[in-house]
Figure 1: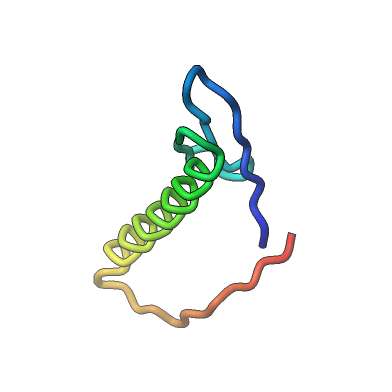
Figure 2: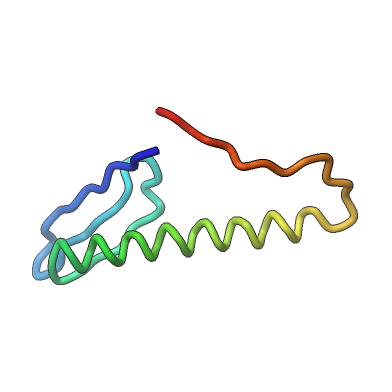
Length: 72
């Protein structure tokens, strides 16, 4: 899966977000810095969602876990 990063100039900053996940957003002084920060923001989002998911599983019987490949 590939995601679409959007970069816009906002004053002295480059603001970046993912078109497919607009709540994953960040900024940087350069496109390179904004790109790196965007990757970090996405990783943090996934980690947070995994933790939330684990908390929601307490007391439930998990039938299966699998890696899901996504092609868009």
